Length: 129
Image 1 (cartoon, helix red, strand yellow):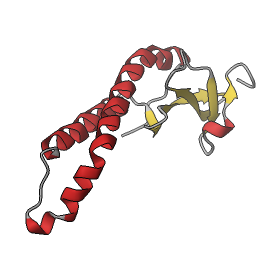
Image 2 (tube, helix red, strand yellow):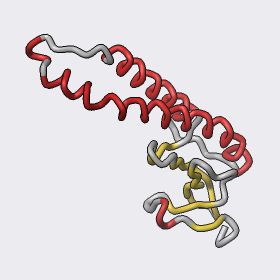
Image 3 (cartoon, helix red, strand yellow):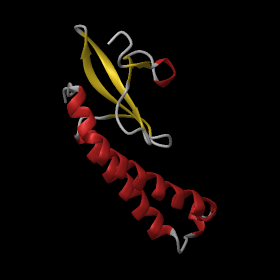
């Protein structure tokens, strides 16, 4: 699948949906973290037909997260860090491909970085853009 190239307006129009999807993922990830000890015990006892009453909820939570991630990817958005809510959007700047960079909690996209760098090297859109 070819990468979608975004305009700044197109990328910003996805921010509200991304905010909802990523917050849902983080909430479900929190649930998984709460039950991880019990799930680990069940894994350790697999050979003895071990299980957990939390097993079905764990599997549903994983499926929930996977569906959200697929939806985001279908939008053409590149997920860089689910835990932090970091996303990139392929963007043409001065004839070269760069990434618009957005982090969960930011109202709009105001940053970019080169495709071979990341969040730590992002620059404001009005600087060299």
